[in-house]
Amino acid sequence: MNNLILVRHGQSLWNQEKRFTGWADIDLTEKGKTEAAEAGGLIKKLNLNFHTCFTSKLTRAIRSSKIILKVLGDDKTKVVESSALNERHYGDLTSLNKDETIKKYGFDQVQVWRRSFDTAPPPMDEEHPYKNKIDSNILCESLKDTFDRVVPYYIKQIEPLVKEKKNILIIFHGNSCRALLMKIFNISKNKIVKFEIPTGNPLLIKFNNSKVADYKYLNVNRAKKIFFNI
Image (cartoon, rainbow, N blue to C red):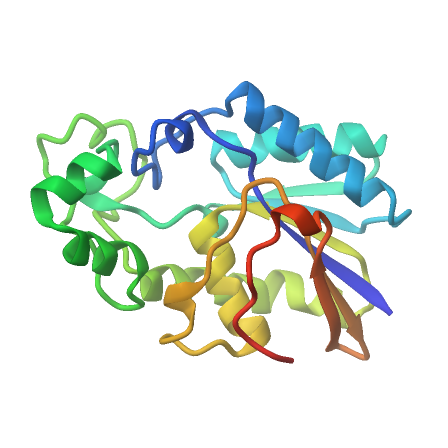
């Protein structure tokens, strides 16, 4: 039996400020660093040897991965960074406070932008303060758009390692994690709208002959409900 562990990065500065982050390259808070260290401690108790640690190209995920691997005392695991695992691009909502955005557009509209599967937020305007700070031609993404880059990367780069019975660690973001879980657990686009990913709480997925055998959050006190069955 082998293991795939998924970790959403620790709390970022904009998580704390309730701002839409997306592809903006925002660092961790002190709490986020602590969450990453605690995630490392939980993983360490499993006494696993990892083949590869995959992470996005964004600082909050990279820093979380470095903290986790340091806690593990692991300087041998290969680390692979890819923008395919980046957070969903929130377009023109990037940097906006979520509560203020709800006041302006209404809860229902913001909920559609945040949680629907195939509706993207407004594209990033040329005058947006983060337009030139994000190295991408993408102007916005729906969860479907995120799914369409995360899942092919997983199938090509990560799934073969799972099938070879390697232990794999992925440290990335709420929406890229949601997209990947849709593939691994065959979650419908209707159910995924209810799915929340807690920061810094490792989700352990056990495989037996490439099939999911079991799954659980390592910190049961910070676990979010899982709306699906194997």
